[in-house]
Image 1 (cartoon, rainbow, N blue to C red):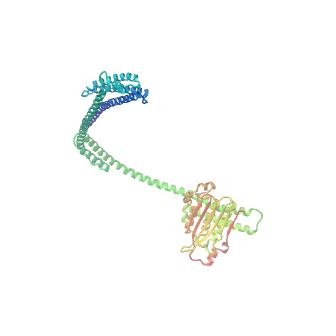
Image 2: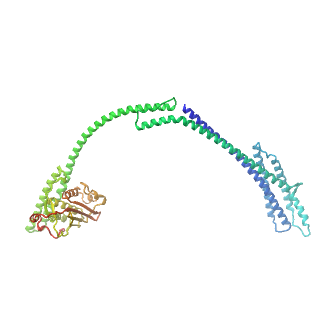
Image 3: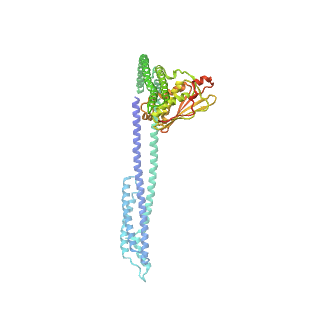
Length: 558
């Protein structure tokens, strides 16, 4: 019902718009016709004025010709041709004006057209006569009466078969001026009634649109408000809301559909909530079972992988040191017994360290390295550092790397640490520096002491090797991480050294930091806290014999 009313209203508006367009086209046609008539009449008036002016210029030429004042025949011919062209244009404009006037049945200028045609005929005939007269005009001879000759020739300009041409031109110009004024008044009158027509049509159309808008606004407001309230209730999730449906129009049908949809949704929501609860409970139970099983598998696999990786890494350094010591000892000619004994002693110490490492690896298979127990003893840093340098020298000679140790500080460096763990930590740093250096490179160690409220010592191990890119530095302490350049330089690494070293440093209350430039080398800095109270002299001496504090330690390739 409302649809039919709305269709009828829109059709009425469309018809009114089409009618307005047709009226506009008709009004534009009328205005264009009036404008064209006024333009033609104005051109005719201008043509008569030009014809009179050209005739006067021709009269001046005749006077100059008779007086032999420099007049030329070409100027005469040009002026005659100009008058003929003007008369021809006036003939065409007169025909066009008559045709335009014939279209307008209410034209009041019809008597002008015969008068205009008659005047043009007289002027055309007089132009032909004037042209013949001017062909025979001659300059005045001596003794000729100039006044009589001028009056005789002047009649050719002003008279044609008894018609006063001057008066005819004057009447024509006045007649055309009056026609121009009449056409202007007609155009103004046309514009006036067109303006009234436009305003009337526009106001009628606007009033009709306003009335229809007011009617449909009043008719649509209440049902739309109801539908809007129902949609908002559904958006909030209130499926119990129902839209009041009065009447039998389209809005009532929509309200019934929305109410039915809300009831269906409410029913479906209840079923979905029940099924979802059952499914969530089932999924949660199965998820807990799978998570438990998966976590158990992950723990087993992680321990297995970590054990193999740690064994591979931790056993490589001691075995390399043992092999290096043996090869160096057996190389060349016979050596003194003391050298063989010293080499065997180092091999024995390394083998003992290897046994301890194996024990640690077995412990790491059951627990993380951070939980390993430390056998802390009072000692001086010089002893484990010397042993680590001696152990790393074999690998350095094998790789043609120079180990250079700067002199230790004059003051003692007392620590409370596990000797084997500390030696292992220092060996890890030296091992990394040697392995990632280029052949013929230099690995430098430097120890410094920092006094203060919390005294500490710093061990720096610097190399000139491949270096570490800045984007990889945050990850080098992660287990199994190896950078791109590290893998290219040394394919057999496992990425565990620094991770184990950080754990050992933290277990001793210290820390490890790295500073590196790609292609220029890396500096590893190990900070260890110093012991505040000095242990009894005999204990320190036992753990730190004086022979273990050389001023400088150095090893160069053989």
